[in-house]
Image (tube, rainbow, N blue to C red; front, top):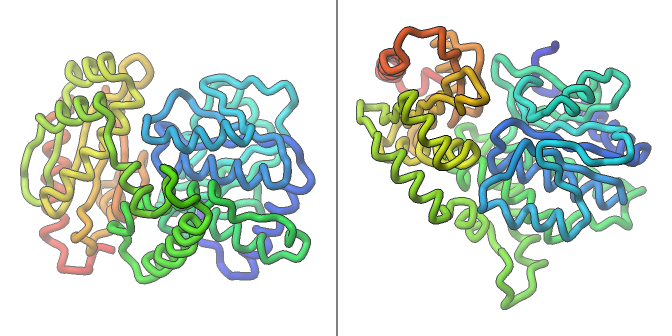
Length: 391
């Protein structure tokens, strides 16, 4: 396996765009894959790339391990209206897939896949496109050489936006309208969702490209949304929709937040084995996973530094304990991927503003003590670093 690295030159990036375009032209049946427990950028990038393929009248199937959060319903509805098949937990396509498209996934073992999908991923004769913005230390390519649009960006949807702009400028595609309302909506959802409306971007480059692409797709969305309709028509409306909790999500969130501990600069939540099992049984894995991400976000904002949520994975499916660490919007001097390296944690990854990692349940004597040790190490790491040192 090859570690992911930044694309070296604009010429190389153009060649990759050309290779992806060539596969889209030559192949007819595509299967789109994302990561386990998909977040906003993952779902949005699946939908955005599916809509891109529909411009070329290709057969498209999105595979999801199970149902996703209710606030993504508008994206899934777009697929339904455009004849894009969504398969939950199994594949139903009669025709063989010719290309796999892996989106927003740091490494192969994080791809949401059942046995059928695993077999397809292992098929060396199958073409594989990859689009992703994760470049942390343990990231590994899953796509074919020359077909991986893997580059630093605020989100995978930003890279899909880049791909759309590049394709729209090619003479052979001048009759294709790449910038329809639904495509703009999907891309914008991923861009604003993954960065929390740009709050968690750190570098000038990240902020520049976020501002550029969010402005382009926000303008397109506004221009192509019928006036006086109830449809989403602005970046702010999209963000509000992503943030809104359903009644069940709110109850789950309030219950999780009742376990809040405050140890400056880290506010954290630890759910023991019994509590975690009760949550998964009561609320379901998908809801617990998504709400825990929102809890980490809000803990970070409350502390004005860092928020951490720790829970046992679904006991019926996994042998791991999950850790989710998020920094606040104002605390931009630390790249959280550096924390992974400093703590010598290999099974994890994320973005400058958010990381996740996991440990095996039987690898530590006491998860509560281990969590407290992790919090203490993070505190020492942050306090010992002069402003701007950890980046």
